Length: 266
Image (cartoon, rainbow, N blue to C red; front, side, top):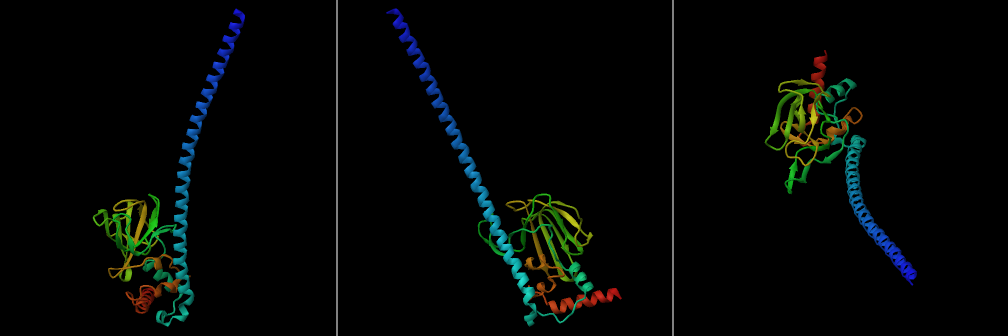
């Protein structure tokens, strides 16, 4: 009888031990499942952010391709547009001189436009405002190049108009460029700079919602859309003359530039 009681107690103890182990394992599984759910949720949010970023990049790239296509179409159709046809023939040396005297090409090695010229919804002030330049994507510390020969007319370490650290350069024939939200400035007022000179590093100073370069082009103190100058080179030479024609008398201007260059060459 006593032996049977001992066996029963042993069985009960074994059963309780097994039961405790089972409950412990179930609790462990629940904690593990909860952890997995949290991890999956975090990864899901991360994937959503990454997907949205890729979608935004694709949309911006499509917008840039449309802009570039417009410029290319202008070049292809130029011969059919008598109102923008220049009555002057240019030799290679003339084109080289003009492209170094007037802002051309990009102030950055890699071009990715994040905000265009014109009226836009301001990301910080939350209202529609005129945007007098182009915003170009650039990590902090990216080299910034001057887009034409010129003289540094102004630098400011903390511009009160929201530009942050900013450089202004005056070029020949009434043109001016501006480079804003810089991290570092490498030039001084009055310094003569050649096209392609590194004048500073891009940053996130002033009124800015992220690292980028704000780039402006002006003619006789009137703002121009920098896009037409951004892709301007010898191959696309004629395309720019259909742009900003209401502000620039291109025919007379380029004829004057060509004659000036020939006089200096002789």
